[in-house]
Length: 253
Length: 266
Image 1 (cartoon, rainbow over the protein chains, first blue to last red):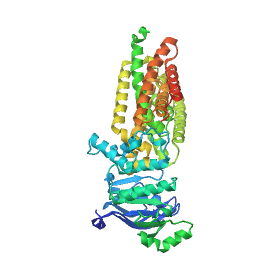
Image 2 (tube, rainbow over the protein chains, first blue to last red; image 1 turned 120 degrees about the vertical axis):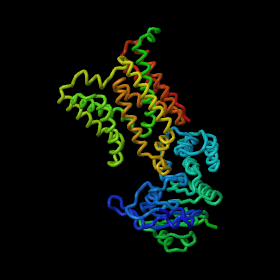
Image 3 (cartoon, rainbow over the protein chains, first blue to last red; image 1 turned 45 degrees about the horizontal axis):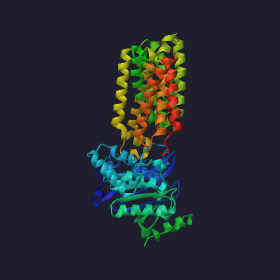
């Protein structure tokens, strides 16, 4: 079964998704679409269901109700996993003594799925991914010996090494200083525009709404808002979030 | 010293010991990183119930122990997933149950005797030629399995969610590692004894993990430490007239200690 929306270059369609965990509603009737080229920020306070929604889209959780289409196919049938890149929320919470070099961390994702690449092509792809995030100089460094910001860049390299068309990031800058965050978002912005990579970023930090974001979805169990960056800045959703104690720092020019 | 190499039983002990040690060391690196260090101890306790059941029904105690251990290992995996228990808690629950059932079955069957203990504690110096072949087959199977799934095992051990999202069948591979560990523990237990199997699963891997900065290096160091421990331990036991199993464990611990002191700080 192919969703009719797939013809409109829609990469992900969420239709009426609801989920309760332990009898507590986490998501109620969520519907949204992610189109090719989007840089979508999914915003919401802690516990609003953002990560749960992301995990449902990725097929890591099953909703109680509703349907998900990924690249036009029902999520449960979607098998072309190299089209998707993912940086989980706790990516940097790994065992710091894990004996993996930066190179191995990127290679493990590429070589985990049998592909059609030769060893030389795989090595070239890993080098390209590390070059993209400017981490080639650290290729032999143990991952646990890098700073949080450097680790996140390596995890971006790991998530793009298979040339995905859409990249999901869950709270990627948690615990990273403001200057590093800016550079990180510039990197993502570059991937979005120059690399034609659709990006979906989940965060509780409204300050992420910067020059690179094109669309915003606000979640608080229900979908409170879904529209463009400019619509968001003038919408009631923004006022509601600001009233809730969130702070917006818009860097859009 | 040259006499050491002339005894057939020592040659068999060396060959089988190194094979079992290699299988344990390679699996051990993954188990330690998955926080499953105690699974060797746990599964050997569960195998006790299997041996006792086999003796009670008078049907191939080793086969029954293998079946019980594999089922229990998969049960531990399920318990961790569905009950939300930490790995060591799930192992402790199942191993306690295994010991309790084993004691009852052995008592009911009236087989609380040397035969039961022989199945459980093995003896590296009493290895038969057929057991050497079994050890080689086990080691080759574990090494081939690890080579075939190396990157997937590493990815799911490092970042389970990212591996799942990337299409790695983590539950199926969990089961594969678990079953391979159960087979290694039960077969190794009969061939070299509980003490050595449990030690081989932990100490060489711990030495590798604290020494190497790359995953491949950790596996290689674990394998080398395991092999040297068997050879050095057997030789020391021969020279000092000490029990072989205990001496091998002491040698592996000494190597671990030396590497701990001089570990690379990369």
